[in-house]
Length: 260
Image (cartoon, one colour):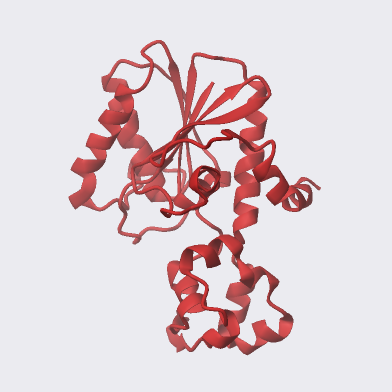
């Protein structure tokens, strides 16, 4: 069985609330739809004509809309679609906004309830960690009560932001369950967000080139009880097996907590 995690297309980020309404989910940049449709067509050309396809999506509008564009390309190619599902587990980082991350990393003010709240970078990022490294190490999850209190109205928001290891844990646990499926002629497409694919890129190149771009995919292959990285925009890992070693070790505590 093959699994492809596909990042949504270029979005306006005007519609960020979860929905189950695929027909009315709209948040993609209309000026970028032609290029996304081209990406969908190129992706479908890689599918085995003997495969059947299942589509899963994050409930965030930009992912749902992207899934529909790929669905149309798949149907046009005459490849059967077995099922379509929407799952919260593949949504964006919970409680997260780029404005919040920028505030923590760069010390830029954040807007909360229409009020600009200052952020002291010396408190939140004293070592000057980069944006990508800050997100993947998620130091805010270790802030003391005193630090959170010093952030004022921003403190409760920071406390509720989902750390990266929790994102990896929820996605990994879902992929682990797929090991039970033995259908070799099946391809699962998961339309999701960059944060849900970064752990694969880490295994390939230690995140030297950031993550995948809008409309790009990372593909995994499930063989027996193992999951391998088959293809990413940055190549494949020398040690391609994932989830049973690197990721599991990194997220074991989080996985145990979620399981209880």
